[in-house]
Length: 367
Image (tube, rainbow, N blue to C red):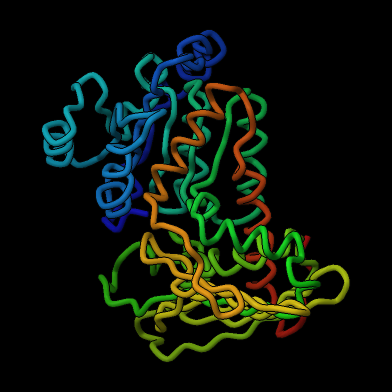
C-alpha cells in the first residue's frame, strides 16, 4: 500500500464522468477483452510506496502483463514515472478524469493501490470502465463493502483479485500443502504473528480509522489470519480477542497490538497476533507427527522455513510478478483467480468479528 497522504477532496469525481462510464460500460466490453498471445496492460492507481517500491519494479519482470498506465493526483509523479517507465501521456490519468480510462484499449487491468477507504470506490469505478481489477489488501473497510465489490464485479462480468502475493510464494505454498493434506497427521496447533514497529508520520492515513479501518490488525493481521486459514484450508467459526496499547497518543484512533484465538470446525483453536509496535513475522504449525514453520514468513523477500527441523529448499521469487502474471492469465483464459474477491471477504469477516470481540470482551461468531 502507498504511504503518501491523500486528501478526500482529491478523489471527488464529477457526476458527468461517472454517468458516462456507466453508460459506456457494456459497449466497451470488447476494449477490455483479453488479448490472446499478447501481454495485458496494467494501470496502477496510486503511486505510493508499494507501487513505487514493489509493483512497478515487479512489472519489469512479468511475462503476461506490463505497466501500461498510471493514475496519480501528483503531477510531479506523473512526469517522473512517464520518463522512468516510458509511459505515454495518453495512459496517464488523475483522480478526476479516471473514468475516461474506459476509452483506453491499452489498459486491461486496474490495480487499486490506495488507502483502504478508497478501495471500494475505485474498484467499482474500474469495473464500470469495463476493466478487470486487482485490489490491494485489506480488501475494504469491512465485510459489507467487500460483498458490494464482489457483486458489482460479477454483474459487470469482470474478474476481481486481491493482492495476496503469498499464495504464489513457494514457502507459503508448501505450508498450504503440508497443512491441508495433513502430511504428518491432523493439525494440532497453529501460532502466527505479524507486525512491525511503526515509526512513520503520526498524521499518516494508516493511523486514521476512517481511512484505514483499523491499525495493525487491518494492515499486518491480515497476513496472520490468512496464514492460519490457508494452512488449514478451513474457515474459522468464532474468535476471542484482546489488545494492548502502549502508545495511546500515537494510536489514538486505531489498534496497536491485538491478540486472538480462532475456533475452527471440530474444535481446534489457534492463536494469532498483529502489531504496529512489535517486529513479528512467523507461522508455526504442529501436526500429530511433525511440525513446520516459516520465519520470516510474510515479507517481500528473505522468507525462510523448515519442516521437522530441515530447511525448506525453495528459492526467493518476485512475489508480485508471479501474482500479476497469474491474474493476467486468468483474464486471458477467463478463469477464476486463486485469490478472488471472496478470499478478501473471508478475511474481513474475521477482522470484523475480532473488532466486535475487542468491544464485547467475549467470543464472537464469524458470520
